Amino acid sequence: MTGPLHQGAIEPALAPAVQPLREPARGRTRRRRWSPARIGIYVFLLSAAAFFLLPLYAMIVTSLKPMDEIRRGGILALPQAWTLEPWRQAWSGVCTGAACEGIRGGFLNSVWITVPSTLLAIAIGAVNGYALSFWRPRGANILFGILLAGAFVPVQVMIYPLVRVMALAGIFGSLPAIVLVHLVFGMPVMTLLFRNYYAGVPHELFQAARIDGGGFWRIFLQVMLPMSLPILVVAAIMQVTGVWNDYILGLVFAGRDNLPMTVELNNVINTTTGTRQYNVDMAATILTALLPLALYFLSGRWFVRGIAAGAVKG
Amino acid sequence: MRSFPLPSRLSPHVALLPMALTAILAYLGGAAWTVYISLTGSRTFPSGRFIGLAQYGRLFDNERWMLSLHNLAVYGVLFILACMVIGFLLAVFIDQRVRGEGLLRTIFLYPYAMSFVATGLVWQWLLSPGDGLDGVVRALGLPGFTFDWIVRQDLVIYTVVIAGVWQASGLVMALMLAGLRGVDPDIWKAARLDGIPPWRVYTRIVLPMLGPTIATVLLLLSTAVVKLYDAVVAMTQGGPGTASEVPTKFIMDHLFLRSNVALASAGAVVLLVPVLALLAPYAYARSRREAA
Image 1 (spheres, rainbow over the protein chains, first blue to last red):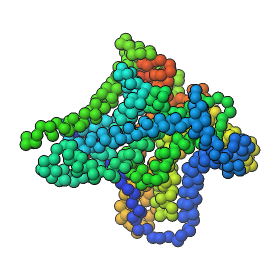
Image 2 (tube, chains in turn purple, blue; image 1 turned 45 degrees about the vertical axis):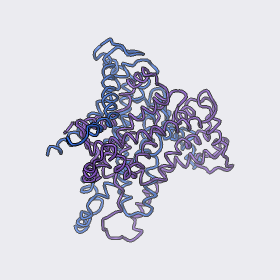
Image 3 (cartoon, chains in turn purple, orange; image 1 turned 135 degrees about the vertical axis):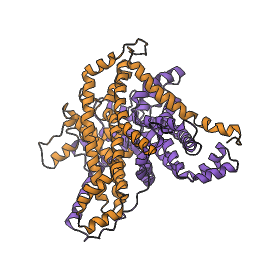
Image 4 (cartoon, chains in turn blue, green; image 1 turned 180 degrees about the horizontal axis):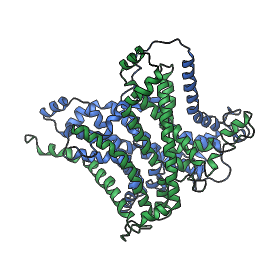
């Protein structure tokens, strides 16, 4: 079963990144602490860190300043009159298109989209990975190869046919439509994660369960699922981040009443006329980025484990 | 196998039904339908009027499409080069037993957790002339300083590169660092005994050993280049004018705003080509390994 895009076509190269990072193993002599070379290393790393942190810092301080202060001082100055008003505005007052009710509606829409899109995607991915690793039905690896190749293809290649089919089915522009689309485009990564995880489970365990008379679903539910907690966490982080950060699918499929936060945010900033309220814009941007950032900062290592596979989504 | 009851033998097939439907109907079927539409004269709705490759001729006569391809090439080359160099340097420097490694890794990777939309909006503001970072430089004592690339037709695409590199080079760092940690410690011992300076070990020995990691990173970055859409929409909306137009945006505009479905589909098919060309070497390498 060596299809042109066999199951492992992409994943072996990803493997190193999915493993947790080890501490440096080589035994180089411990040099004197502050040689010029070491100072150079720290200067480079710290300036790089400053470059990476700059936008986050600028966003945070701007969101806490009144507008006249932004006009007067540079964007990097600390606020003199601290205020949370921009945050209140962004959450419940700013205009997104016609209505001026802030982006809290978009936040709730994103929650309603993300919850089912994550739970169902994980369920399907886990079953796929389990079936691919242990049962290996004929032809399944070819399907999986198509799925993985699809993960690298821009969604524009499939988007119009999906729109037509959903319109025919009468669900275009609704919550089920956007969830279904997220399931379709999230499936490669979810399946890959679980397939690789179950590939590391000793096959003898599966054989023993078969001999004890376990069927497909019983072995899955009673043997495999209970030991899948680590990969369930990784998959949840990847899918929540991916769905929450999605823009294009939400824009096309969600419909006017379900627009996710990213789309509303873009509407707030790029379609409003008149003077730009930078402090409100920045507060809205932070609010939109908050959930994935919080997941990242809190879950650290888990996030890194999943990010290589998740990078396929982009 | 005959000793097992029938339902259990069928369950794997039933369980994989969603995957089969997705792979065959959504992915293969969707791509095939798009190829078909691109061969017709469809405008707002698909039509069966078959006109061969005429849409592709129109596409490559279209100035906006050619500009978007040109932008994609400029963006792709610079984005990939910069991400690779910065990511590799960050990984090598972090690998020098520095203090605060965990914190530095967290800082370099956090932009990757943000959406392209948020990234694009932040950089739109940071780079906007007058209000943005150039104001800070002016306040620091260079009153005449301006950085207005984002409103310059000839330079705007480079600002998108800055935002893209900011977001993605941490990912390269994480993957490269994992690769570096996988290098056999004995190589370092041997190199030290022979008195080879570390920078030469990195360039001559370690870098070639990271081949598979580099290939993965290149694949991820280059498919991200082809998919570039959200960041441009958020940062420049393709402007000023059409100066920062990219193919994905051209396709979306012609699908949903300009009612030229066939032309958009032809564009999508053109995008499919580089992706398949990128994937082919992987599939080939894998099948060779399987055969061996």
